[in-house]
Amino acid sequence: MLLSFFTSLREARVPVTLREYLTLLQAMERDLPGKRVEEFYFLARTVLVKDEAHLDRFDRVFATVFKGLETLGEAVEPAAIPEEWLRKLAEKYLTDEEKADLKALGWDKLFETLKQRLAEQKERHQGGSKWIGTGGTSPFGAYGYNPEGIRIGQDGNRNFRAVKVWDKREFRDLDDTRELGTRSMRVALRRLRRFARTGAAEELDLDGTIRESARKGFIDVRLRPERRNAVKVLLFLDVGGSMDWHVELAEELFSAARSEFKHFAHFYFHNCPYEAVWTENRRRHEERIPLLDVIRTYPADYRVVFVGDASMSPYEIAHPGGSVEHWNEEAGAVWMQRVLDHFAKAVWLNPIPAEHWAYTQSIGMMRRLMSDRMFPLTLEGLDGAMRSLLR
Image (cartoon, rainbow, N blue to C red; front, side, top):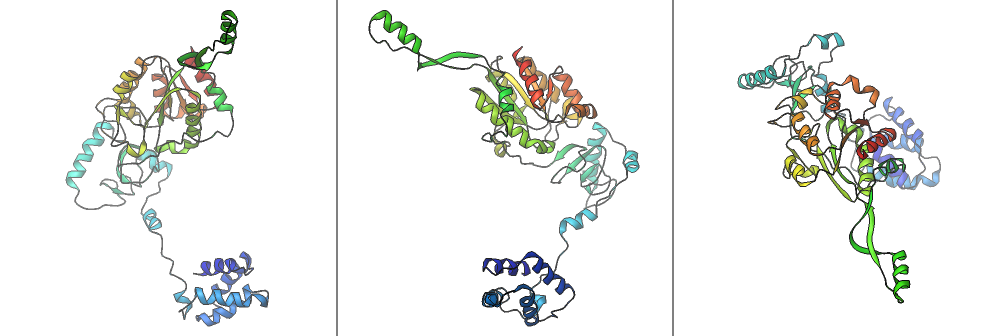
């Protein structure tokens, strides 16, 4: 209410400043106005009004904001402790030595143990090392720490250690209308160009018209197909999770690609392509496109560009069921290989700086699958990727 009072005075053109408002708050902290609104009125008028010409406006604003109140206790709402703070108090913050002492269970043992916990546990648990719950060091639950775990019911990553996420997550589409801050990225994409005249004859062929008119003795208008970039591109975009940090860069690339290539299609995936991809994130659970259909629909002369940080659990690439979101019958590496077997010309653009790739096991695995055709999502890396696709 005090903040509302301050903004209302400004709206009524009473020239109060932030410093005067802070002075009023300091006076209240020292309990100068006592508890009655009437006493607060005289204090506020003394601190905030510098010219008696503004007294009438001040009185009208004061009467509106504090109408019907008799004590300041009714004007100031008690400051409740935010629920988020209380929940965070339950989390354990471990030292590096304590984290190192925790052992990963391994893929098979992790799921076997989860089944046992689900069968045995009958009530909510918090802060422990065994049961499914919040905080603590259990491999199952939310807001805790474990080298490998299954995250259940948490709204985001904390330690980036989960090998599976038991949650329905929503992603948003990348904005293909976003304009680039510079033209450099678009110029780099233009390296991937092979012009051809295809389609209907709709463009005036001036040279041909002059030549034929001179030969025939009358005006003979000649048309030709428009000269367009004949290169065809499929863009696969990783969304969600750690890619949220790179959305702006990915949107710039998406916008540039859509404007540069006539034959262009895009698909989304999360972490690693599996049996299905999608074109709209808000409908990704209802309108999924089988990856085999993509392979059958688009001919092998399409160039494929993957965009993603390749930062995930190694299980997502190497193991059936390794997907963080669903149970995939075949490993991510199998699906990646199917794509690469069909589309011979493919590259992977990684927004993580190349000097950091060695610290993430999954990046190395994906890089090997791509036969080392992984490039950083920089102007230099983009230029190298386009050269690779033209070979």
